[in-house]
Image (cartoon, rainbow, N blue to C red; front, side, top):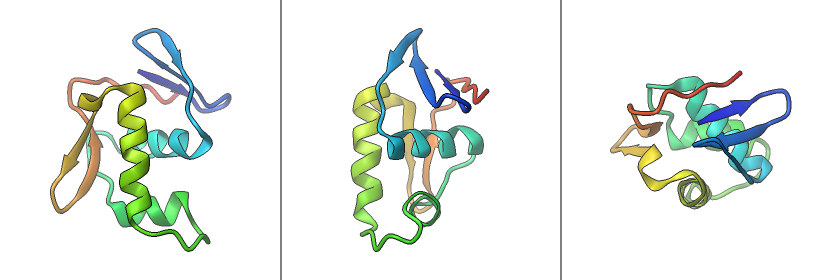
Length: 93
């Protein structure tokens, strides 16, 4: 899996993945933090900054992203947030 930060294009298993701007930002946060988890609060503050978003919006977007890149690629770390799975060797440019 890779993300080109200049074009914000994502490829997964060699194929392009069509992500929304927020889905791309979410993936970028997870890639940059890898292998550490990112809290739901941090994602909400960084991606939905200034918007009065409900914390459940993060869960919804994680669900969208999982469907597009593979459920097994994003791990929920109970009490800490989300992280990319260890088997992935993400590349953010």
